[in-house]
Amino acid sequence: VQLQASGGGLVQAGGSLRLSCAASGRTVSSYAVGWFRQAPGKERELVAAISWSTYLADSVKGRFTISRDNAKNTVYLRMNSLKPEDTAVYYCATGDRLLPQRIGSYDYWGQGTLVTVSS
Image (cartoon, rainbow, N blue to C red; front, side, top):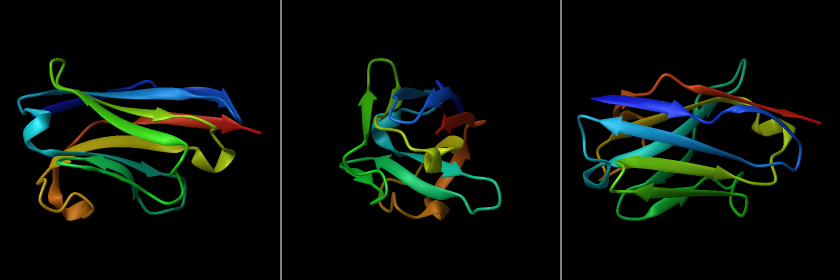
């Protein structure tokens, strides 16, 4: 199983980015796919997940959306109204869809893509 995360970059506060997580070796619609982020000196945190339903962390509700394109076997994270505190390396991961909010449910991880939001 391989996950290719892309779409990160440098954006001004208030701007938008769309991250993509392209999967191979696993059908994303049959598993959970989560987007995590890790800022310097902080623990990795779950930002959004999609399985039978979607989950968004409170810190991103109303600004981020997660979606899935089954034909492309790809999951997207649309990030609007970005804030400097959203700056982090974003990782996608896939795992057991029964407990998508548990980091331990994820067994395959992508390489990460850096998102930098300037003030």
